[in-house]
Image (cartoon, rainbow, N blue to C red):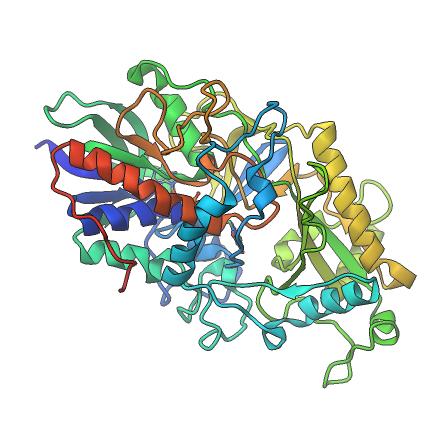
Amino acid sequence: MTETTDVLVIGSGFGGAIPAYYMAAGGARVTILERGPRWGAAQFSHSMRLGTYNKIVDVIRGDGVSVVAGNCVGGGSVVYFAASLRAPSYAFERHGSIGRRMWPASLSRATLDPWYDRVEQALPVAHTGWSDVSYAGGVLAAACRRAGHTCNPVPVAVDTAACTNCNWMLSGCAFDAKRSMLLNYLPAAEAHGAVIRPLHEVQLITPSPESGYRYAVAYTVLDPDDYTCTTNVGIIHAKVVVLAAGAVGTPVILQRSALLLGGIPGAVGRYFSGNGDHVSVADVDESKAGSLLGLSRPDGTVYQGLPIGRPITSATYDYLDPSAPEYSRFMLQQIYFPPLTNILAQTTGAPGWFGVDKRRMRARWPSWLTLLAMTEDDNEGTFGVVPPTGGFIRLAPGLGQGTMSFRPTTRTRQAWDRADTALRGILEKDGLSRVRPWTEALAGTVTAHPLGSARIGDDPTTSALDDQHELRGFRGLFVTDGSAVPASLTVNPSLTIAALAERAAIGIATRVAEAGVTMTGGVPLPGR
Ligand SMILES: Cc1cc2nc3c(=O)[nH]c(=O)nc-3n(C[C@H](O)[C@H](O)[C@H](O)COP(=O)(O)OP(=O)(O)OC[C@H]3O[C@@H](n4cnc5c(N)ncnc54)[C@H](O)[C@@H]3O)c2cc1C
């Protein structure tokens, strides 16, 4: 039997869930194919045992870059740390290396603001105060103040009253306090008839031979116990396709489909950005944290609080200076990663990830302060030879070999160096700590914020999508995930991806209506 739908959505993170809701609420038949399993609060566990978090989070290793990404219904929104910030105005004006504005003329911070407003209401985003900030966030704040800088609590998509500060956000929220897509857009889409199919991995998009349907989407069904095994295959014909498999998944599906689609825009699989992510560890001297910063904890220790509290709680916005030249603007944010990333922390001597020095440093782990700099990179990432299935070759649950390569340009390196210098100015002042950027020797640069691999823009040679997110030359085929974001933002990107997906829903609905589906306008926010 031929299977059909009006709108087929690939991926269920921010980029997929949001259009899925608007199309379903507008009156279309919507099917969502999601590669990962469907887990909820009952399955999310406070454990680093294999078989828990690594069933829903992937580390995808490329050449010179590693990407951390969600692999479940809700995508990255389920495993992310929920820092929810609007991108600064200058981020939309960037030229990067192409000699012209990378964003389409129709998009700026001002034109995206109404869409940011909607997402902040829909999730919703909580504006936090100092009582919400962890010990680690407090150390950054106190060090900033002492160095003459400001620091702020970070807004989060979390119900702070329900949050227990357990610090297991990477494993999914067992208290339903994190406002992931599982709590808003996805259930609202299902309430309007959308069907979510977990463990359905899309492989190929081709033109559909079915009358009235533009595209045929081929998928495999994955074994929940072993994602490398296929239990079934199928094809769905759709009038409109929304591709939202994330900035690592989306370009690979398009590359694999290129021949059968009759060629795809040259910008697919190019201009990949890691959002300029650059992680450092500051090894804090406990006595100096007491004497210099005047900090202490009720139990008599001074700091020793790295693992306590939500992963992201404070940041300094002092370097988001619109008048500064490109590649010199960045945000410094306190962040927490689970102990399995400790191997990336460097000691002073080479090779830096091994030996006695490393052992001593790891023993001091509770006194670390981890910092994420989000800088302006050069969109230098590219995707290579297409893997046989999926977006990468799966080596183990939670681990994959990807096809992206990232060779940081001088400008990207200079941007990282500037962030390192600023960090040292704040955190090494008078011996408060020793700052050590994560080594690139093991996994290349590491990012949880992949962007740009099929981006929007006005210039067909450097952007795969037009300003409505439609793939150039392919009516009714849209990309609405992080791939579409043209360049690094110097802030965490989820709110921008979500706001762009909100905005793109109008153009998608127009194409659905053109395909003969009766669509209702003025769809309210989910849950309203
Ligand atoms: C640990 C961690 C912490 C983070 N913290 C923050 C934060 O605090 N603030 C912030 O702004 N951002 C954060 N991020 C980044 C944020 O999660 C991503 O930017 C965001 O989720 C990207 O949304 P997306 O729609 O582009 O893709 P995703 O959310 O990654 O969704 C893509 C979905 O597509 C699915 N998929 C992939 N390939 C296929 C296929 N072939 N067929 C079917 N489905 C497929 C995937 O399983 C996934 O569910 C974090 C990310 C991680 C991993």
